[in-house]
Image (cartoon, rainbow, N blue to C red; front, side, top):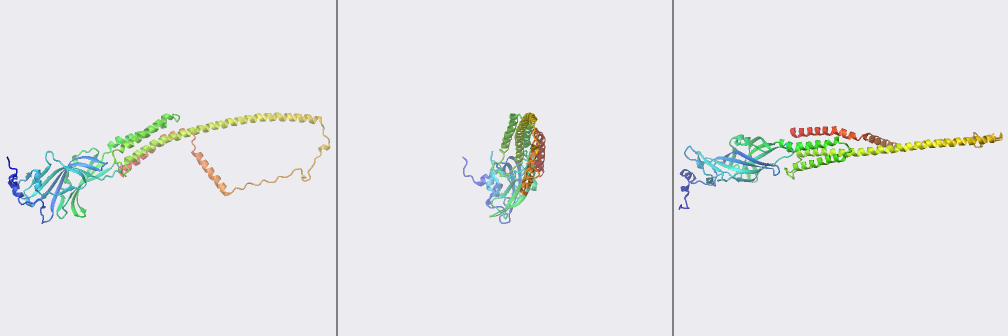
Length: 440
């Protein structure tokens, strides 16, 4: 049997055993001679998911760190590649991802670590990590938005007096983004920066990797914009259907409204339920819903006007028949009065021929109070009208004239006007919408 208590010198090779002799992993390099500089580089293996609901992204990265430890200098011209489990014997930077929600180190089949020591004491330490990092998103222009996410690396316990971070090759320190194929995004730009994180306990080194993502709009055009626009066009079909076809026009109007409502609810399922953003897609769906609802209201107005117009025609016909009846009654009354007067004249002529009056009966009696035989009538005084009464009458006259101008002579003209005004208005609104959200 092998002895369970194996000395450290028997496990480690002579070179490593010599380096580890007197090595204290709890003390950083250059402990009394200024800060240790740590160079970093990243290789983005994949960006698995980008979630608007949680406002984060999940990526798998290869993190490489380089620093120089004067205690690990050895003779030779070849580097030493060690088992990753030997990292427990060395000092390593306490680097962490600032906005990480959850992260893990891959351990199949062993922990994915790499340790390499160069003769001049440089240490290369590489890790394979999958991390979910928060990304604050502005969804005002969704789905025509562009998001800028970051990956921030800081030192947990060593401040800038102990450790300094830097990118090994500047903006070229991060690779892998050019070959990534994302579902809804394209990587437009990426760059690196160096800064300091200021906390109550001091200033700490900080490296930031920025990358800009632009959303691909083609999916949303085919999934949302085209169906909603076609629903608006479908609602215009009712303008070519007769006003008397009430079931057909009501069916088209209600069906398009309900379908548009379902489309609006489906578009919100992939977004945060509680956010204060009025998104571009919400604006467009609201515009389409307004046009569809307006087409339904247009039919209600046109149908009401047609009923009112029909009632007015019936009323005019009734007045006309009443006038004809009055005219016929007047003619009959005139004829009967004429016959009655003729008979009276004939009777009076016969009476006058039978009785001849004397000269005394021809004397005129004149009233003493009226020498001329007639009493003059007093002149009628014109009615007095106040100024406010004239103003009120003038206002009422203007209102009545305005209402008369708005009166629809033919309700079918409403559909004729709507066939032109609705499409033109929709085209104009679309031009303003796309111009604003694409160029401003």
